Image (cartoon, rainbow, N blue to C red):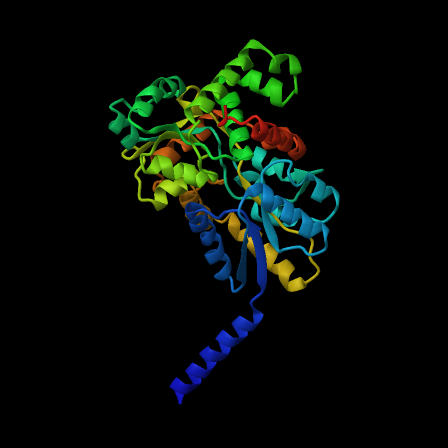
Amino acid sequence: MKVIRSLIAATTALTVSAANATDLEVMHWWTSGGEAAAVNEFAKAFNATGNNWVDAAIVGGEQARSVMVSRILGGDPMGAFQFNHGRQAEELIEAGVLRDITDIAEAEGWTSMVNPPSLLAACTVDGRVYCAPVNIHSWQWLWLSHKAYSDAGVDVPTNWDEFVAAAPALEKAGILPMAMGQQGWQQSGAFNVFMASLLPSEVFMSVYGDKDTAVAGGADVAKVFKAASDARAMAANSTVQNWNDATNLVITGKAGGQIMGDWAQGEFSVAGSVAGKDYSCLPGLGSNPRLSTGGDAFYFPVLKDAAQIKAQTELATLMLKPDTQVAFNLKKGSLPVRGDIDLSAANDCMQKGLGLLADGALLPDTNMLVTQTLTRKLMIYLDNSSLIRA
């Protein structure tokens, strides 16, 4: 009888738990192999609270943002959604459709925990917190295939100039010098990488921070357009669309290198490639090792259902917990927003990023300096006068 009663009690508990589980739709644009593995860590942690993560992934950040904004403003909000740190959500905050999560930030001590502080500042409007920063992503990386350079009989480059100089040898060996997807955001990203990596930091800030047109048209910035011209020539035969397909060309040795953010690490990891053995990574293109402090954050639309509001609180809270931060960021290739967790398992590339973060070799992300409208204009311009089309 005791056994039967125990089984009945266990079954009843499971039934009650399932009945009390709250579905929370979470929208994001993490659809590549490495990204999917990373976001699954959030889903597992959330489901462990007794709730149910309803995954709503959309391919492509620009398309995803449009869908998210349309649904929220149309009165059909999801439970949570991913945006980048910065000014992308300003209009939604001003419209009053995003939840103020200052109470969660204060209860969890985010102010003393999040590093660098600019990440939480990017979530803060008029002293109120509207998002949970989950990682630090940086664009300023050049990923290099050891196989490609070995097959071409040249040394793996250590900076941008060497990368450009090695291009003819790769072409002679039938290897694409530079992989780049044919999408505007990838090209605008590469252009911003040149700005951050090839110029003094004061010039970068004059252009993006002060919007100084005289500096933007000066001799220093001319170096950036020369680098963009070199990139266009090296990537002339790159025909892939998606960034992860371009990364795969590097992983398989079909291309020498790619400019892409540290999220590319997730693709190398899924493929079983080892940093320092199969591929190299050069922060700041190897020319000026520094990183921008951008990344991803989750926002929570205003909802009416009490159970879903509670589930939002649980999700926002767990996203910055130590175990969740480690599990997610090791898969994502990004750096954690907490400086108090053990990342001894991090690979060579992540250790480089952690070192630069500790040294303060940082720049604000362009998303924090310019509006989404201006960024979109740059993407359209580069799409029409593409880096990868002569």
